[in-house]
Length: 212
Image (cartoon, rainbow, N blue to C red; front, side):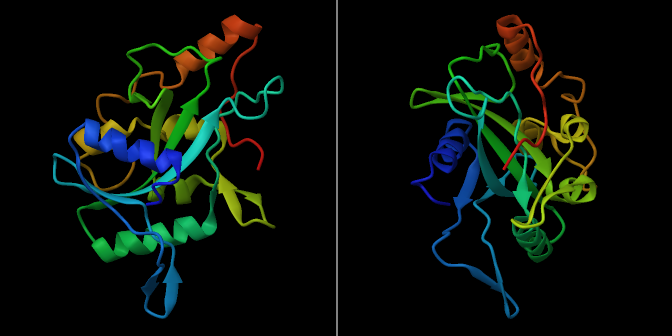
């Protein structure tokens, strides 16, 4: 974890606010997997059900882009190196652990969200929306985004189907196959943001990977 990173600091505050037991991983030194250097994860979180969540926080902004040229896209890109590293950590921790990308979206003031939106978290004057995808599911459905930068993403429809509030994995996740979803599965996770954008511009918000 890098506490100078506002997204990772906000996620740590979220964990503390929800009383979740966690360990922040020191990112100043890379770990070794045999003779291979492996990118560190950000947090190890113990869910109430006993699942060990291995978390890589992905800080994004919604909408993206500068003022006047906003892009209403839910960015979800990652690097292949991040995925490889998280898979290595999952193998090391073994059964009972679950690798997660946690996309932490900083919601700009121009967007209205319902106060009861799942995992909408306010901290230091900013609003953050937490959405998570298992590493296993991400690998299975990802598409190449930039060969030059080694980045991948989930297509819009797939991201809609896979993304879940972080609290689902921290409080409700019991299965080990990475695709089993519980009580939140029918909740329209991005609907409130899209409706807000529609009312504002007469359009609809895109859900997808966006530009680099």
